Length: 81
Image (cartoon, helix red, strand yellow):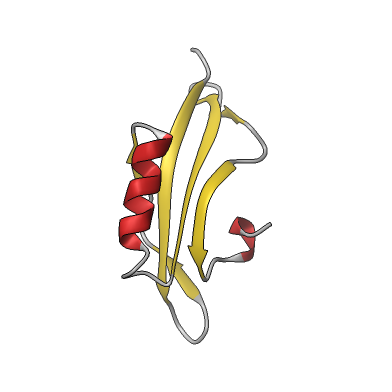
């Protein structure tokens, strides 16, 4: 199977205490669509990130580092630089 780029939007809401809870990731068709969705969600979520990852789903072989193209608000350490 060929390597495919997947575009995702991940939002975060308040969890217990100061923790963040991840919403279900939203798959998008392009980076532009992911950015637009993330921008719209930013006013209602504690944090939002839009990113892409490239890999071969059949082999489970994905790039080590996703490419982040939109970040706003409170994010877990995995999503910060």
